[in-house]
Every structure is written in structure tokens, then in C-alpha cells.
Length: 276
Image (spheres, rainbow, N blue to C red):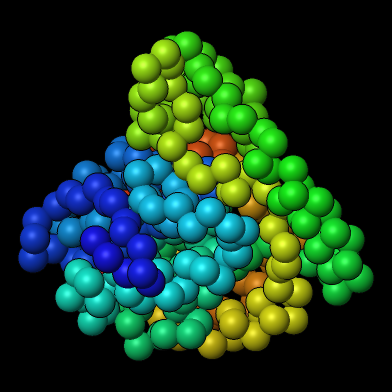
């Protein structure tokens, strides 16, 4: 589908007249992040996109920012003909979902979040160093060739070795299968190499909380027992801003929706549909 001047690829599941849900994956993942969870949302029409630069969607070949996702989501909702939908977001996708819902609350029935609530913040004092580091890395990017993997198994090994949070091999395999591009002599990542660069800028916590205070829809946040989101120092104060928010911890890590908790999470999310 076409939005924000880009072509987006997606995976869809569920009845055409089901409850509309747009699913947004995490950083360097892709739409396959939801292959276990989406079918269990049996009353929903789930469209899981490859976000810009990820999976099989178009590259912009320039630095990416978390706020890029807001016009993308709104444009995709328009392309789907959905005046309203629930946003299902994991990690980075949860951050994009939070920002979009704050700016366009009339378009969002509910927020179903996994291991994330708003973007990761920066202190204002970090900005000059962040700009310098990101610029220097950007200058060196053309000199860095794409790594070639002889097999899919080798790419899975690399995905596991580079994971920010622990990930099972089974979960990694599902993400890698959609995240590779076949070459004559092996495989390379299909994602835009610019995604591997540090971001040029981030919101500070005051800006993020101003967005969160605008949220009026039902919000459900699923955390993993060994996930990374629950340890974030800012999470408690953000949750306190949303009296309508439900928070539940499920067995699993950062990718708990790919590692066995998907059935329980789906049931919990769908329980809010009557109120959305």
C-alpha cells in the first residue's frame, strides 16, 4: 500500500469485517513479529505492516526518526479506508502507536502495547553529542558493505548475537525469514542500512509526557517477566498519567508475543473491544 510517498508491505489476517487492528513491529524487526499473535485475535482484521525501511517496505536511505511513523500510520489508515482502528505495537512500534494516538485520538479505538509505552527519552544535555556521533556514523555508512550470509541459519545466528534483549532461536527465525534478501551467493538483510545508525535526535521526557497526557482511549500494556520495558525508570510515571490504563505481566521476555504468551495476550487485548 502507498502512504507518505512510500510503498509499504504488510501481512493480513482475520475476517475482512473484523475489528480493525494495525500492528507495528519493533526496531529492526518486521511484520512477521505478529505471526503468532495475530491469528489468535480471531475477532480482528489485523494488518501488520513492515514499517519504513524494514522488511519488504521502501527505504528512505537517510536517517530515521521515531516521529516518522506518525504520518505513515495515518496514511496507512487512510489507504485501508479505516476511519478508526486499534493500534497494536511492540517496542518501537509501541512508541509510534503512542505518539500517533496522542496526535490523532479520534482515529484510534484503543492502544494494545507490548513491551513499550512511548519513545525512549533523551536528556537535553545529550543532544550535541548525539548529533555529532550520528553524523560521523552517517558519513562512514557508504564505506560499510552489506554483510553476506551463506545461509539463513547463519543470519539467524547473527540476529541472536546482535539482539538488544534475549530472543529465542524460534522467534528469531520467524523474523529473519522475512528480513532477508536472496542474492546469487547468499543472503543480505532487506532492511535499510540507515536503520543501524544512532538516531539524530530524541524527544525529552517532558515532551513525551505531554503526548501521553493527550491519550483518552483504552490502553493495555503487556510486559514480559524478563522483558526490558518494566525496568525503564520512566515507565511508572508515564503509567500514572493514564488512569484508564491496564498493565499486565506475562511470562516471557521482550518478544513474549513470539515465545508462548501470545494466546494469553490476545485474550487480554480482545477483552477491551466491547469498551473501545
